[in-house]
Image (cartoon, rainbow, N blue to C red; front, side, top):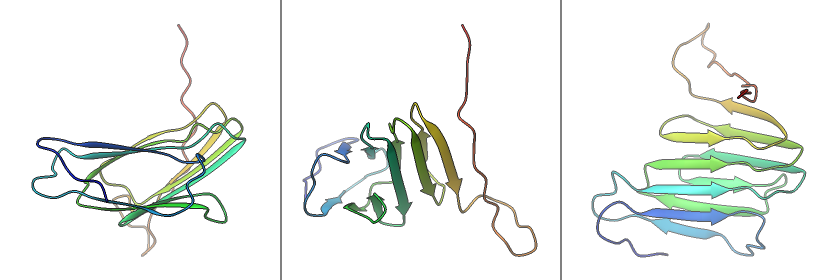
Length: 128
C-alpha cells in the first residue's frame, strides 16, 4: 500500500518487471486528479485487462494491480507484435504499441438490441 501525498498523485506500474505479488494502490482524501499509469513491456505480446478495481497483465494472468480511489488510468501497451487491451471505458487513456493493437471498450454508450457495443480500433497512422 502506497501513501498518498497532497494534490494529484501519479502511480506508475511497469508490467513484465518480475512482479511476484499483487500490488495494492489506494488513494485517500481528494483523489480527483490521481492517475495510475500501467505500462506493458516490449515483449512480443501484451494482454492488459482493466476491470473495476484492478488491472491485469498476461494470459494467463501473471501480474495484477488492485486500485481504489484512483479515478484516472493511462495504459501504455508497448508490445512489439501484438497488443490486446480490454477496458470498460471511463477515464482511461489507451496507447497501443508499435505492433498490431486490438482495443476493446466494453461499456461504450448506446445499445443495440440489449448488447453493448464492442469495437476494435486500428492503430492510428500519421505522416509528416
